[in-house]
Length: 247
Image (cartoon, rainbow, N blue to C red; front, side, top):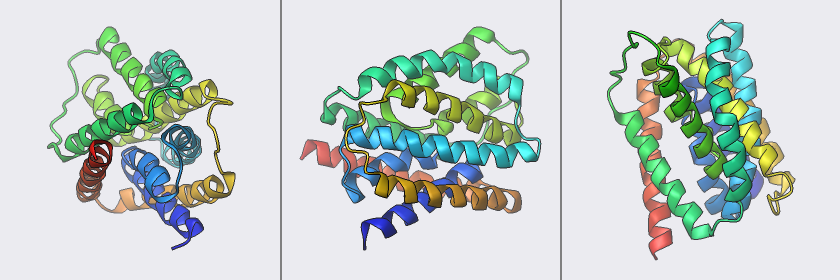
C-alpha cells in the first residue's frame, strides 16, 4: 500500500473519531506517522499537532452550528492550558526518542482505559475554579508533550468538573483541543524536522472529511460502541509501542 493511500485512510479514521467523540482519534496520529509513514517521533508529534489543529477546528465548526459548544466555559478551560502547552511544546522536540515513545504509549493506554470505563460522570453541585484550572493546565501539558489533542481527558473533565452535558462536552472539547494544539504548535515552530508536507496535506484533507462524517455519525448512533472499538485499537497500539521500546 502506498504512503499516500495510508495517509488518506489514517486521516479518515482519525477525523471520524474526532468528529464523533470529540477526541480519541488524534492519539492514533502519532503512531501512524511513526510506524506506517516513517516519521521520527519528534517530527511525528509536530506533524500530529498540525493535523489535530486543522481537523479539530473543522469539527468544532460543525458542532458549533448545532449549538453544542459552551464558548465561555471552553475558552476559560482552554486558557488554563495555553501556557503549559506552549512551554512543554517548546522542549518536547529535544527529548530522547525512547522517552517520547514510552510516554506516548502510556498516554495511549490511559486513553483506552478511560474510554472503556462506564460513563458515570455526573454534574458537580458547584464548579471549583482551581480544579477546573488544574484540569485545563494538565491537558495543555499533555498536548504540548505528545502532540495529541487530549479529548479523551477533556470530555470527562468538562462533564464532571464543569457540569456540561455530554453533547456540549464533545463540542466544547474541540474548542479546547484547537486552542491547546495551536499553542503547542506555535512553540514548535522551526523544530519539527522533516515534516514531509506531501504526506501531511492529504492526511489533513482526509481527516477533515472524516470529521464531518463523524459529526453525522454521532447524530445517528450512540458513541459508546465506537468508543470501545477505538479503545481496543489504542490498547493494541500502546502494547506495540512498548514492545518496540523494550526490544
